[in-house]
Amino acid sequence: MGRGSLPQPSDRTHAGRVVLQSNPDSPGSLGIAISEAVEDAATHPDTNYSLGSVLNHVLLHQTVIGIEARQQMALAGEQPDVVIGCFGGGSNFGGIALPWVPDKLAGRSRVRLMAVEPAACPSLTRGLFAYDYGDTSKLTPLLKMYTLGHDFVPPGIHAGGLRYHGASPLASHLLAEGIIEARAYPQLTVFDAAVQFARTEGILPAPESAHAIRAAVDEALEARQEGRKRVILFCLSGHGHFDLSAYDNYLAGKLADYSHPEEAIARAMAKLPKVGAV
Image 1 (cartoon, helix red, strand yellow):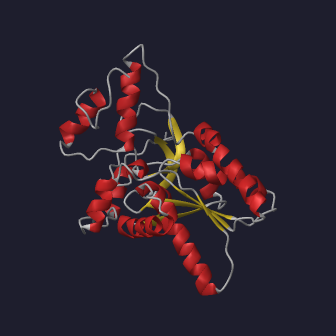
Image 2: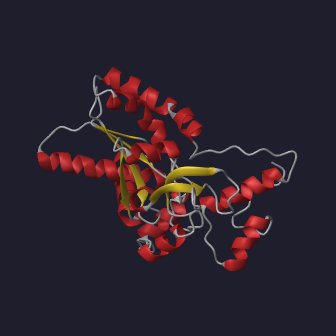
Image 3: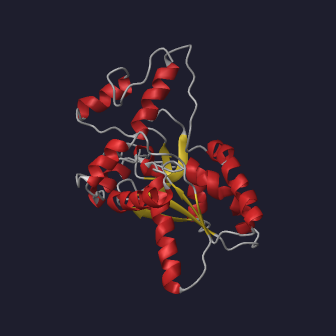
């Protein structure tokens, strides 16, 4: 607490200095932030580190959200046809979606469970299901997950909480088994849905949450086109009161879409650890 908060990569840790040495203009990433935070905790006896996403126990902890949502749906006399959550490391999506997984596995429900990520950091839709480190400096244990490579650095999009190279092992396994699905959106269409939501609902959503809103809007439009009823449940995980500059940039036409080049993803994934290699 006494050291305050620092933007990353910083010059206060070895991990941060290594990144800055190779790229002084690095926009940072959640992988770099984790490396710096773990190093800081390991080198200060009065400091502990608690992960807030990615690891399976965090997703299970967050399922209080989905459990309450199930009860609310029951009170409304409805069951969702699709459950949607934004996806960075997995806690938002896992929290809302995991309580419906047992019903799908038992054949009691055909509900679709949709994870929505930014096209600029598409770990689920363009990543590889492999063992990788959870941070840039390789301080964490290896995790079997969809990953873009532990040293993948996404562009500085405004959904900062979704700029992570990997995905929860639990969510990754469910995706590999076809239990959940994933979708990626560029940021301009996400902000378009966010502004529409703010004007109609009076709630300014966080850019991360707006990814789920974009998918929910598209699901509603598709249902209207098909002429079928569709019950859509999505997780509004945060407000955008601290993201006003991002909205200002969007409304001023200063934001641009970004899809990471395939060759850049290939370079990052080429550095995955060789697990089981002779």
